[in-house]
Image 1 (cartoon, helix red, strand yellow):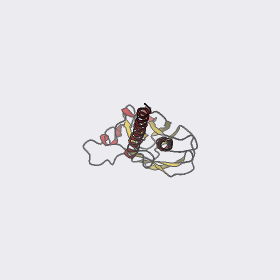
Image 2 (tube, helix red, strand yellow):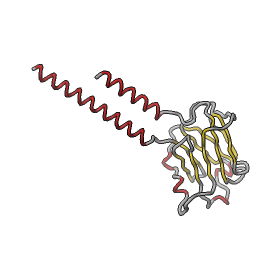
Image 3 (cartoon, helix red, strand yellow):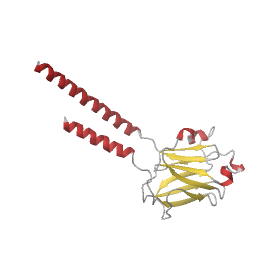
Image 4 (cartoon, helix red, strand yellow):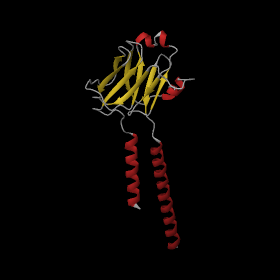
Length: 192
């Protein structure tokens, strides 16, 4: 039974390290792709941890009544160049459509908050009635918008397969405990 316990501890350790994996590891290159924004809007890129995502609207809900959204979008992807900001930094939409390339040289980044800083944190007036899209590409599973000013967040949630592994690991722990209790009980009865 000791071997079973060690195997379960190893499996939970592997699972935990999968969940704790960084989304933009140190020395990972990544890009921020901006499409159809007004020119010269400025954002802060804020690596964060423990971000409260409850206020961020799912991008699907940002397109009510639309089959697809073709208005401004922001996408984070792997790949990129050698511009190497560390921690929080600012970037501009420039002409409105462009790909900005970076390399993370600081600590691993688990979540990202993009916070509009131009115009006092407000969208330009001609963008008030537009719909917005976002994607974490191959870095993050979730993104969403927050309308108090204008913010975009990127974060991950465990994949369904990870939940299944966790449930199986928990079930295995319970089986081992039941077997141990049963063995102790049988041993106690035969000793009487």
